Length: 314
Figure 1 (cartoon, rainbow, N blue to C red):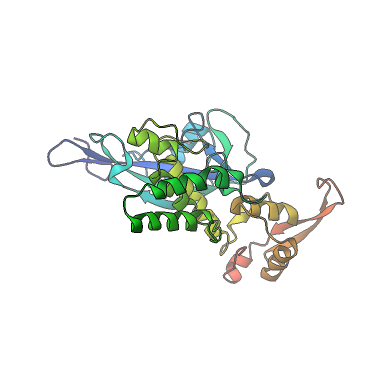
Figure 2 (figure 1 turned 180 degrees about the horizontal axis):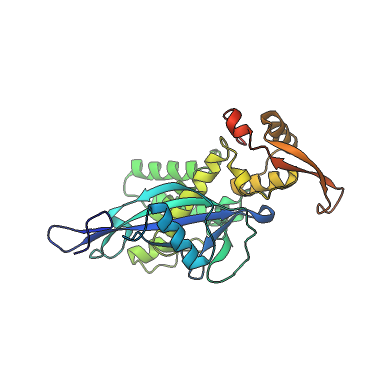
């Protein structure tokens, strides 16, 4: 029986144990591309058990991420704690509680650099990128399969409820797309057996999953939670600057916001908001990497955090 100081505890019958896993959703946005740090051939997020030798949860997470990826953690915040009984498909498995964290980095990620690798988060959620309009995968694959799933419900009210939930999540039947519903969309696809993780867990053996990159366990669910948190938070806090280099153009800033939100923003309105909020200041330098006319370089005005609450990029 392991020590009962919070790491692991057996049930009275001695048949099961409870342990805590620490999981990191580490995000970067180089060149307007939202990237997430992965391990194990992009099938998992950096993670490891909370051990007695760890001084704190955050120090334990930092240790695991550096061991597994070689990447030091900067800004992190606790994301969510997952403790669902059905997180494991093995009924006799130990009960695992996952404590997840969201981290942001300005560092330029190197694609495929072992032992960790950076992947676009739209590989895992191709239906979430609406910068060029609604992705074809929604109307061509997801909507027909969700309608079929709704029609398969036994009772009329259940069919209507399923269809209403699907329309609200994916923005069809005159519903508006809400970029913040990342987790709700993934969980709906899971419920409808349209993601590979659900097919594996339920043992249906059906090749009905919507084309996308899957992950082990519930790591894609945790990633969806991180994306949803970030999409919400950029609207009321200037966290996007945690992803920007020290100096940047306003176009680079706009592209980073669009990459995270999966939507385009109105250029003039965006710049007007940035100016009204007094979020940036000119460096006096110009960038020649724009492919056209040189553009002014800006930096985040950190003093704004001490002066007042800022509105983010809503």
